[in-house]
Image (cartoon, rainbow, N blue to C red; front, side, top):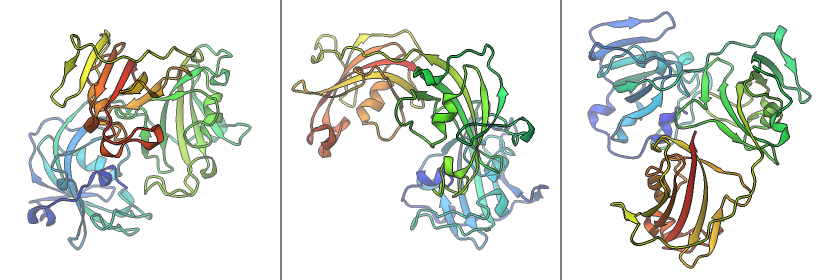
Length: 407
């Protein structure tokens, strides 16, 4: 599915937004089969390029005029990084537009859902059958520079090697100073990753501001596709390697949408950025409530005390951060923490799994700071509680968070 599909919410869509717009005064057709017409001229300024963060509205129709998706149910523009996890037609169409422009774009199947189609999210979002041409309307709200996208070429068979596990790989950038230190030493690793499908499309990259690099240790099962443990274990600091991963070592028969259908060969670029010493246990902070004279309060009712202010950059809503934490109920019972095994928690501030108190509280912090929070039930686990942590309904919670860094 297009990333935007997951964000489509049930809601009223005006009759004007449901109807496919008529072509503009002139229809242009590109050599790749995509055609477009200008419905509203933009400001005539710069156009977004791959890697820019773009904010836009869109709607999609079958050729018979049936609406199958729209961002306008959300009430605000969709935000994405141009060229990451989207159909080629989206990147091509938006790349033709200046700020404020509105285009109608007719798309052949091979530039969108192709022979795979899309399962949709019935009943609000109907499926798109395989080999179906579609029509999109785009309205570019704004854009800004974000990241430099990784480039991709199919591996050079003459330069490929094979690991013991059957992975084909090619060294793109050798390590500046090759050492014996690898993640196999059980040190903590930080790896930049990008994944491409067999059609050279960038599906995901850790350069994306809302994703962040892969961190962890090669101890026990590594979270992710099966090939990752072997691949990361062989890397040296600074080295960038492209792996050609067969389906059985990656996502197998899992259907991850038209960008990564079942039985897909995928290509992964991995670069080991840093190795840190194996984590050491850290004492868990003692429980105490907030100092009334030092505590502060937000409009939502979140209370906090700054234990250590920190001198690094401030956390943004799009940040991914690394932190240590401990959480207590009001009676002082410790229900969760990251200190004892020494492994920090990596989390995206915008992760929907976070309780609202964390999402708000983290954005008050700077890298290197330590805060203590008192979180009311409505900003915590609410009326449902958290049974697996033995937290009942409508419980206030206390957390101490040490923000190690912004990734």
